[in-house]
Each structure stands twice: as structure tokens, then as C-alpha cells.
Length: 171
Image 1: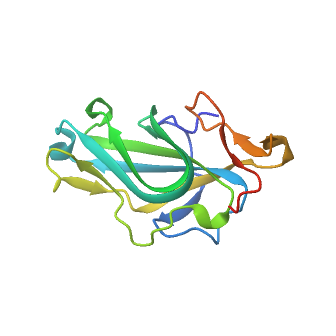
Image 2: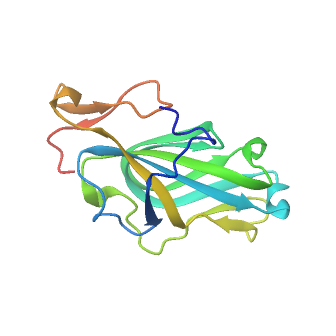
């Protein structure tokens, strides 16, 4: 599935407002895809260096910007901050796609009210917010087929290896 492509038709996906914690709409032991289109003004698009900040996520993730794989993180609760190459940032509409994997429903965006933005690293006061409505779709469900040597194994798109964590961990 090409969820990360900028032209992927996601109009029938659910809507969630982030960075609120989506415990009431997600289930344990799943992966999820999140997508957001943002409009970048000319003065921001002309900068040469960018950082995308997405608050703390307690899980594994992979990020695409305008259909190009940018980065991935393993299963840990850390502030997500991604360097976005200037060559990927366009004036006008841009797309952010995240694939997230969690063992617990409370592990998503766990900083209500946190700053979520695409920021110029050369002019930090120049940014566009990415908080607000995102589209999301459930991905795979973790089950016994995903357990190898007492670890859950899933492939986060863009990763050369499966991400793993203990099946008995308290997630």
C-alpha cells in the first residue's frame, strides 16, 4: 500500500486532532498511518534547513515528507524531531506521512498541547504549525504471528529490519 505517496486518496480515513492523546480512538497492538497536508508560504519554503517537531511518541515510527522517506525511530518515548532536507520542501501544499507502531493505546502522542511544527533552522521564528486535524488509518494488528523469540517483530516501512521489543514488556 502506498500510503506515503503524496497523491494517495485518503479522504475516507478517520480524522483526529493532534497532539491530543488518541486513547479513545486507537486500539492496543496495532500500527497506524497518519497523514497531514500543510501549506508552506514562500518565505518559509525559501529557507535552506528545516526541522519537523512532533512531540513525544511512545512507540516506533517512520516518516515521509512529500512521499520521500526521511527517518525512523525505534520503540521509545522520545521527542520526535526530524531534519527535513530543503529539497523536499515546496512552496504551497506539502504532505507529511507517519507510520506508527504501538503495543498500548496510551503510547501515541502523549503531550497534550505540545508544539508540533515545521520550522526553519536558519530562522527559528519562521515556522508552520502541523498540529490540528490529521487523517489516520489502522495498519497491521500484532498477534502471535508477529512474535519471534519472545519479541514482537513488525516492519516499519523504510526500515531494512523488523523493529522488535519484548512481548512480555509492559507496553
